[in-house]
Structures are given as structure tokens and as C-alpha cells.
Image 1 (tube, rainbow, N blue to C red):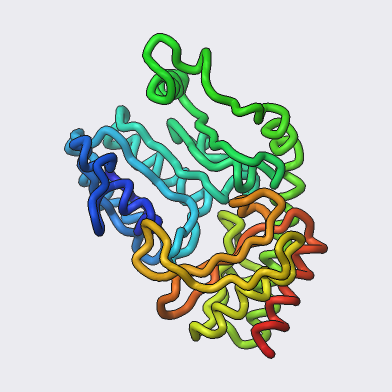
Image 2 (image 1 turned 135 degrees about the horizontal axis):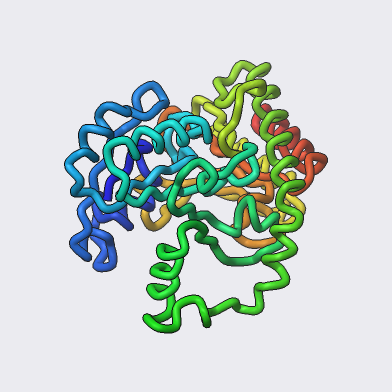
Length: 308
């Protein structure tokens, strides 16, 4: 396996088995080798990728569209399409998988439409629209989907049976409302970007830049600003607005993390939420907003709380 999209999420280091205390269920524990080719200037290092894949000894290439807890830009579908075309010039057989989390419905095309073999993501984010209370999705080549289904259940059964946890109506409602909810999330992110930029903070993306996902980063400069901004988001939330979040230890993360999410569905980051690791340069990672109106209110509350 090779990742060509830069640094993985903190928690994925544990899944892969490349940092900290190794899990007995990590990829490494199953003798799956992992290599990483970092981005250069927020784009793929195409020549290095082609050189590595020309050896024909890599089974799967993983691309992570969103930034995770990193300072790189999120990848656009145009960049993903370009690198897939270049990969196919040297290796037609390697499986190309895209982690599409936070990216669904943000652009006019999805990874499968530009040549990816398989795409995966969460139903607690864009596609669930704040309605689905659990779940994830896998889409792509039929043979690969069948392999995934057999891993989930058992050989011979595959996707003919499996746990839905009475979620089917919620999953379908979530998918139905998802385009509208993603639009509101993007409008909320643009509003936050412009407001914080005008207040003198470094933001990415800028309000008028093209976006590859719904995540908005706000470089707040100090631990106090990061904590207070997240606490302000919580105060502007529809649920648990009386709760005050504080940084704490979290499994899979090297630093303490603060998370604000007063959401109807626990863990649903398509609803307005904000979080970040307590480390320099103290970046808040904000996403979501089921409606622009309450997203805007939450941002104003966060700014007000931070400035007090």
C-alpha cells in the first residue's frame, strides 16, 4: 500500500502501525507494508509517484482528499483526475482508492467519475446530512465491493446480509438532503473565512478560493484563542449549549485535542463543529452547518466569545 496524498490523520498512524504504541490490529500487524509520498506545494509529486509505481510491486494507492490535522490544502477533483491519468500510464493494475471524507457534493464530480477504483467515506458527515446516526459507505468496482463485503461478513455471504441497525430510512433521508446541507456547510465556511480574515487571522481556504471539501482552517495563534473559539462554537450550538469543552487526551492523538459539537447526532461533523490539536500554530478545524442561518449564528458566537 502506498499513500500519495501527504501526512495521514493522526489516528490513521495507529491504524497503519507507524507511530506510537502499535496496535495488534494495525495494517503492519497483518504484514501490509506502507509507504508515503508527500505532496509538493500542495500537489502530487507525479514523477516520484510514477517512478515508484513503475516497479509494479504496489497493490493499492490511497489518496486522502481532505487535509486531516495538517496544514496542507485539501485536494481538488481536478488534481486527483490528473494524478490518476499519470498513474495509469505506468501501472494499469494498481488499485486506486480515494478517502472522500468531507468531499462529497463539494465539487461537480466525485472520485469514481475520474478513474478511481474505489471511494470511501463517512455517513456521519456530508452524505448523512445530520440525519444518519451511524454508518459509512464504499463505492466503486464491483469486484472490489464484493471483497469488502466478504471482509465485513463472510465469504459466500458478502453483501447479501449485514447489519443495517435499522438505519435504512435515515440513510436514505440523509442522502436525499445531503446536497442542500453540504451547500449550507460551504456557505458557513465561506462566512467564517471572510470574518476571521478581516479580523487579521490567517485562514485557509480564503473565502473566494476553490474548495475541495467542507473543512475551514483558522490559524488562531494561541492556545487561548483556539480553546475560546471552540467553546464559542459550543455556545452557539442547538444542543448542549451550556456545556464548556476543554482540551483532553484522546486515543490515537499525540497532543491534547479540544472538540466542540453541540449536535443533534453525536459525532455528526456535518453539523456545525470545530476542533483542533493543542499544538502550534493552534489551528481550529471547522466544518458543517445543517443550515446557513444557524451556522452563521455559531460563528458570530465563537468570535464574540474569543474576543471577550
